[in-house]
Image (cartoon, rainbow, N blue to C red; front, top):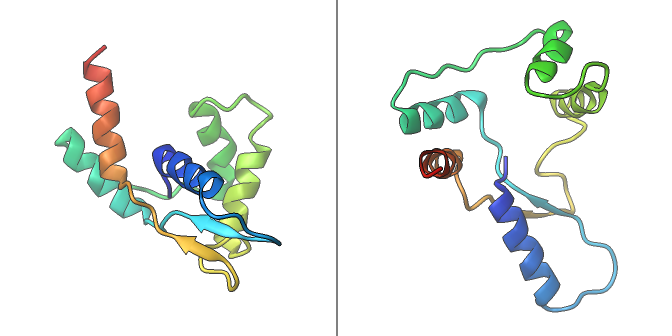
Amino acid sequence: MVATHDIGAEIAALLTGPAWLGHRVIELGSMVSADEVATQLGEVLKADVKAFAIPRAGWPAAFEQLGIPKGQTGPAEAMFDAINSGWMNLGVEGTEHIPAATSARDVFAAARKAATNV
């Protein structure tokens, strides 16, 4: 996982840093389990939050509940299939790994603060 703040900061560093030639593959973020994310969200909300698995057949409906239009969940499903199959993974040889600097807890806390300041 990676926060948008971390993405922006890394892109700015790459664009303003030393020039390079050739091809670079950079992976930004850190692997975080669903249980870790649920725990951190629970800490911010001061509530008991639990992660649970959704069977593959239920993914389209779950993505639709998150706002993806009906019939257009294919790209999200493909991304999760790639992660679950190991095709898309952190730690691939030859990549420059940059760990995430912002935790899920920090993202949730900032969102909560923004929501209460509206």
